[in-house]
Length: 270
Length: 270
Image (cartoon, rainbow over all chains, first blue to last red):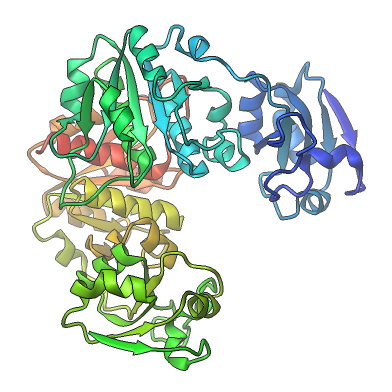
């Protein structure tokens, strides 16, 4: 445990956490997308358990006490600051009381995340960080092994996505498709049945479809709220499934719809 | 259809829509909680179909064209403005292009919302407007007939809640319990089985519990994210149910957990 007291908000050692609301805080870094930031005790704990190695932490003495056991053997410095210094550095009052920063390691490959996976989520056009974060949280809780990104998805390591995911964006393995939608055929070659979510009333119900594929590897394809999956992704899929909806309502939130499909998959594969 | 062109952003006829980000915009009104505001074509259409009668609308010419059929026979004025005037009045750029305002009618009573209902959601301590909005959207899509508020819930008519609900906060009947948690016994007297959601691993699975009560009236009790239901609400309930979770994860978002329970209820009561 490497605790360093810092009293000056202008101290350059706190730069990882400066002006957090700015979209790309560290364009000087190789990826130009900024560092990965974990907020709050629970998410910092999940970062410590993940492949994202903290560079630095900044937090109050109270949060340090809560994290003490987790920080055993951790080299990265914990900059201990007052709540006032913290607010001054990040640019707003942050009531979670502790932050950790990590560089972006290399992305995992599709082959890496498929190894051993029984159920995966495949996202296309999900460009809202909050929905993306929710999907990771739902994947973690409802037994989805990995997430694959097709075209048009937002960055799952963006601060808001990591926060809404409760840190599961750091733990659930994910990979970017390099050739979309052709990589869907790669999934099929790996034995995955491709299940496309759609509001189309002609599709099979999610319960019916999940029963039909209960003993197979499954990829659950989810498109953007509104437009849904593209025609090409839909055409590549094996089965189309829908959530039975009441009162002529149009659709559920994309992360909620995904959660219902994940739930059905897990229910039929206990 | 009552279209009135307005070019001056200071025109007092636009006051219902002024400075929308202020928390209580119209403390002069009887409830002191501000007007009910619908944003966007879809939500304005839902307001027009609801018990909330628009006082006024403000929007662009393009949105007027999209709403023309819905405005047939509607007395409230549609103040037609440019996008610039609109942004000036509301205080930020609002890309949904149309707003409607409504006064708050009297609240429905518990007896009113229970009449004819087979499945209701009962919320306790859900004080986040976004979660509240999501719960209404999920209730509408997944065949929940009404929502009952116990202690500690936020205002479902707050602008953000209405927006996230996609307008379903205006359509799904709801009532406030006047005597909490004693009103739970009133629900039971009306033949409702009280099902309490909990992360407790000792509870029955949601599938198991919903199967057991498939032919009865059901009230699904959901507590705040984090603390969950209070001991008193838990003690008053008939059955405790949980969503099977993977990887030792703690919990799902409260609106997502509710959606899974609503889904199971609907699946077993098609």
